[in-house]
Length: 100
Image (tube, rainbow, N blue to C red; front, side):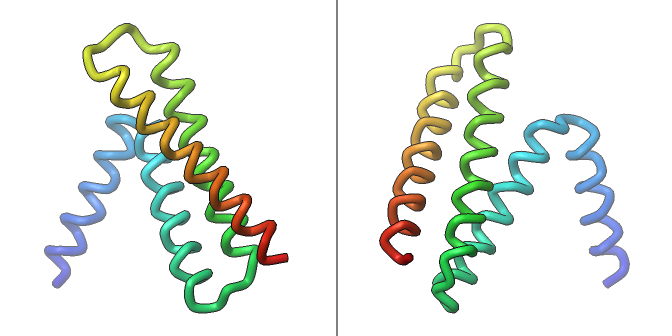
């Protein structure tokens, strides 16, 4: 088991050093997923708001990174994904307002 955990931590360390912005976005989206699962079981609105704020932060990070980076062929796809995440955030925020 120690070999698997060692591989996991080495992979995590390499990913964080290779591309830090994407690593932070991955962590934020993972935490958003955890908060959504907690909200499904507990239905307290702070979980939903925190999840939406993580998604909003990640989407904003993707937007900024894609807009300042040199042109790539998949830029439109990444911007569409960021826009979809922003739309999901808006939906979650409206849902959280109805819960209050």
